[in-house]
Image 1 (cartoon, rainbow, N blue to C red):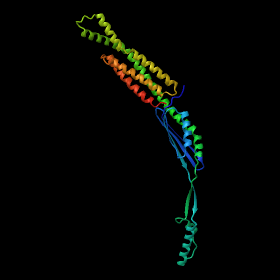
Image 2: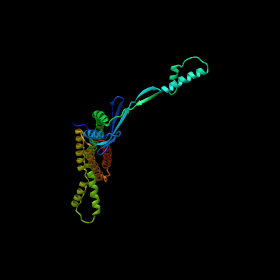
Image 3: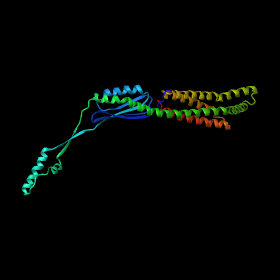
Image 4: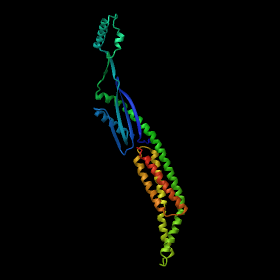
Amino acid sequence: MSTAYSMTGFARIQGSIQEGIGFTLSLKSVNHRFLDLHMRLPNGCDALEMQLRRLLKEQLRRGHVEITLQIDRQRQRTLQYDRAVVAAYVETYRRAAEENNLPGDPDLASILRMPGVFSAEAEDNELKPEQIEAAVVAEVAPLIASLKDMRALEGAALVADLDACMVRIAAVADEVNTLRTDVRASYYERIRTRIAELTEGTGVSEERLLSEAAVLAERSDVEEEIVRLKTHVDHFRGLLAAGGELGKKLDFLLQELNREANTLLSKTSGANTANGLRITELGLELKTVIEKAREQVQNLE
């Protein structure tokens, strides 16, 4: 059994390029008809983009995937003092003491606390594209694995919901099957009476009248729709159990299920008995369950 993947997921990983410079690489995916890759990379990373596209295409099949790379620089700062400023403070101290006939030498600790004495310069290392590429590519495999793990969890939840929908559709089909015989008999009698009214005085035989009514009643029977509904449900559940790339296959089956539900409703729309009304309710429920399943399927890879 293969794993079924959702197209919704998120993963992030951090790494180091060199001392003081790291990076954060993140993947975010949502549903899409095809594999749609969008890159947000620093300038000059054309070779890295090609590498990322190749690696992602090898592991992912569908989804709108956004790849974001951020370079995190931890700048090292060097603390320096301004000799000219310190000398100016010392000279000013001595001149003030001399002019005011005050004893004492300048206090170095006090001077070093004066404004403008110290300055911090940041060391900014230039990175080469190949340095970024080597560091980032080394972390891509675990990042994709993390994304796929999340998509697998989401996929398992979707499969459980879809299987529950199919169980309900099968139960509805079984209930309709138990009601259809009574509805068919009621429909047959209504058609026979109507034909008799329309052909009164025309000399149509009772045998011909019954034959025509039987043909029309047969056309209104939903046995074939029930058989096809259950066949599609079995096929659908079989695909869910097998896993793998399911989205497009399941979407097609849901279209077929919806077509059978519409036919069932159209055939039984004129049945006004209690069973006929119940079949209409069940047909509408079929439409609701199928639509719910269709929304879920859009998120499967």
